[in-house]
Amino acid sequence: MASLVVGPLLRYVDSSSASIWVETSVPCEVGVRASGVDASSRTFTVHGHHYAIVDIEAAGAYEVRLDGERVWPLPGESPSRITLTNQDKATRLAFGSCRTSVPHDAAHNRTHGPDLLRAYARHLKNAPEQEWPDALLLLGDQVYADSPSAEMVRFIQERRPGTEPAKEIADYEEYAELYRLAWSDPEIRWLLSTVPTSMIFDDHDLRDDWNTSRDWRRKMAKVEWWPRRVIAGLGAYWVYQHLGNLSPAERAEDELFARLRECDEVEATKALDVFAARADADPASNRWSYSREFGDTRLIMVDTRCARQLTPRDRMMLDPTEWSWLLEQVSAPTGRLVIGSSIPYLLPEGVHYVQNWNEALSDGRWGRLVARLSETFRQAFDLEHWAAFRQSFDQLGSLLHRQGKPVLILSGDVHYSYAAQAGPIHQLVCSPIRNPLSRTLRLANVITQFGLATLVGRFLARLAGLPRPPFRWRITKGPWFSNALATLDLGEAATVTWYTASPDFAPIDALRVK
Image 1 (cartoon, one colour):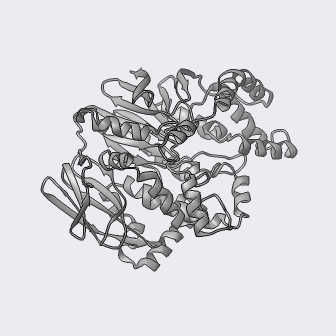
Image 2: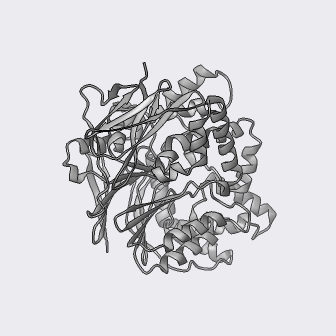
Image 3: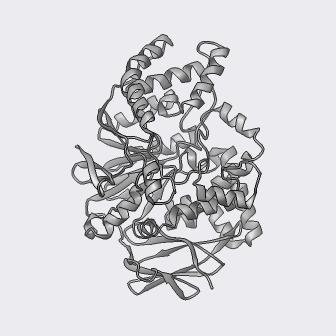
């Protein structure tokens, strides 16, 4: 008898249809029923795992059936609901990033803090439906492939004792288990089955510092297990995260999706692996970025990891193909722009200057020896944000300032939350959902990023002969270092509110953007 392994996840939703994603224990027919409407789809199989995504034109409470047998909702659990997008009402988006998947007992709450997704699920179960968000944006590090939980490490060691990487994900089977652990807690499972989710990766979905530089890629290419890992990581990301980002119309035109549904397991697995290998070697062969419409708001989720151009002295956060797509999306008529970038565009100003300086030195501004040392420094201290791709930083800033209207950039990555403003550009950062910095690192960040670096960074940038940024900005809220989740309410004005779990799902602070 078929059973659910992961899911259901409510993914793409618009004003007329919703997409439900599942992983099942065996090949089967997956059916969804809501408000008397039935829809179904046959599973496809890759690497021994079985998946389906079902599109249904209905709203309200729904149930999932496998080969005709009801498997969701579970007995005694709250019902899952589909709420279609209402283009005439104000939009609410929830967002955050960086979530480790460890148990929710007292010991792990002391080391990792409370899980804000879990706290949000509990809050929504008791909240009126008008408080529910139209979408939950997960802005990177949905899983930690390079720092898995103790439970995941036991799975790895029992499966392949003594092999490398001993405490990291190695292949697709381990990625599948990693996602299962991340999304199987009952509260999280209900939340993901009820609130539509849009996702984009960051480095830990693959590995820390992924695509930091050309030197990083060359170093990792020499690691025996890395090619298998990156193929598995991108393949699993496509199945578990990216597929649900696509609308039914986009999936209907997706050649890989069509092939996976048509082929047997052997050919489908090969097709997925070939796709993932090419996506890593030639980023222009595939686009992970995508856009969504919420009333008069356009959400643009940008790939700031795989689409990088890493050529020294010509580094770009987005390669020419990706930049052309972003230019087209930003320039198209719309009321308000919201951009999802896993890494912040506007950092504290001093850190921005340090990253500018490091990029110039890594590119040879002070000679080859200093370039080698600067590259080591770049990787050791994660100097890889938009500021470390100065050409792209200036291009994007110029583009957004020309829009003549407020632009909201939602980001995560840095493990603290804050807001910054540069004229019409509003940077809103919410991180982590559950992976706090230690007290020592919090203090170090306050001193170096919000104190000392402001003076040192400007001095170093001036010493290297770098031009000033084309505009100034300032931190307007924060920083806060607790686990957090944020909501963005898009009415006549936009209001962002950051929440923590102490004592319950409680607001930290809020900011109104005209």
